[in-house]
Length: 133
Image (cartoon, rainbow, N blue to C red; front, side):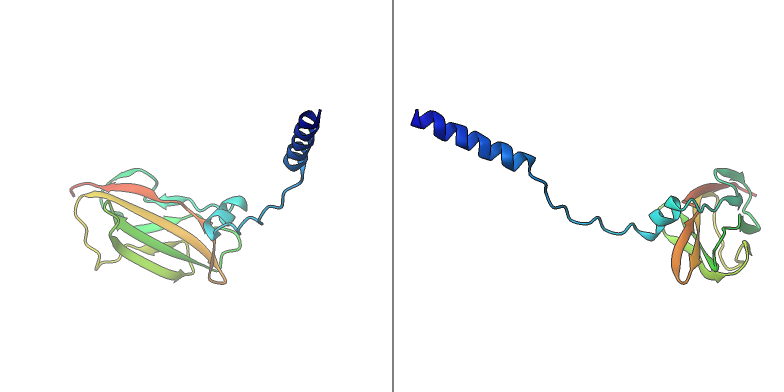
């Protein structure tokens, strides 16, 4: 009988522990890019559009994002070497920089919208292919 009673007490203790509320650590704040997606502030690529194939564009152009103070634009090649980075842009387009010469191939560009130095909008990374002239 003593063995049965101790087994019953042990079983009750295990059930109590399993059903007891647990403290959980607070979730970390979402990174700025995720916050932008949660807020549904999206920037779209206009020129060159996503998956564009053709000659080197003469400008980079995108849609306006609500609440943005300025934009930052980056262009990189297919092995992620930055070719062009510009911040503090107040308009929704910039001319292709004359000093950045590229060969035919695949390139990627991204625009982020900034407010108070924080990213609040993001276009995501888009590819474009430059063909021989």
